[in-house]
Image (cartoon, rainbow, N blue to C red; front, side, top):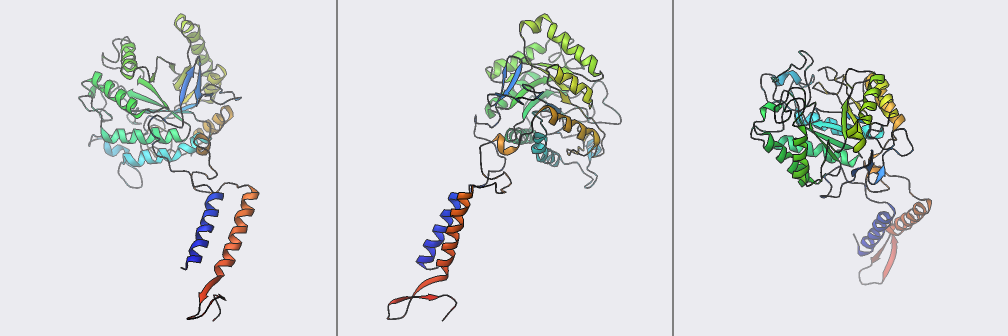
Length: 407
């Protein structure tokens, strides 16, 4: 390429680069402390990035959410692991499970979802038999017996939190689940270690639930008799994090399993009327309920965030809790919930939850101003014509202009 051609090519590239911005980067971890989705609490409302969630919509100040306890699930028991095999590969793959979940986060956000609950000890994974009381046979835990953290689980959790952050979604991290907590012999160390990990990650889109239903057969450390020691566990997280982690004392968590909309509203009303709540009002979140849109409607009408629970079966089709999970919006129940969510909360696209760009995250060009297109087109035309004409020097003679396709 001649010097003239090189210069013209540089001019052409410069024109293109100034008129078209580079594509947004794929979902990777934001630099420490600079997340895209910063959750905060103001009175009884939630804010994201300093503004009330879902402004002007029925769910203003609320977090419409869905329980996705198995997003980072794995089972280390060789005797039960095959229960979760995918029908196409005939084996269980925890990384595939997380990858498929993360791939759906943009779609969830576009349907108004503002929070997901993810479990470090999963949820009940079995359809038949259903989860028994006492110890469960499968081994589902991000914690080793000594309370240290398993790196594979933490890698998947980081993947989920980071992708959620990119999509305007808050993650409620649930530490312990009944039937699994007993595998952790040093639960004090476990709470310290996961708290340190979350603080070090400086994740701005994380809330904490220390135990799912602390009265459901937990150890004395997590229960103490009808959740009597739960306040101590919460205080441990608060003290260890220096108050940076919003744990479940910063908000009230309710479960609506097995009750109808009228009963749920009565539960919410009794909670709000309690002396403790009146003394310290804060957001109320139902982060586990059912597939009932009646309950969802009743909760939002009462000014309370609501969470979808769709247990399904282990068939890679129905529900969101029985592995292998199909994370797509592929059943009537799922479609009804997500459609209803969009009535209450506006959809958020990944582009609008991160930094502005003229290109979508997929690299697809957005609309450019007409003036920019005109200038770019003119430069392309001029550069194209000039590239057809190249200076040549006859041996021993003065330079002359010749057409490239003529001798």
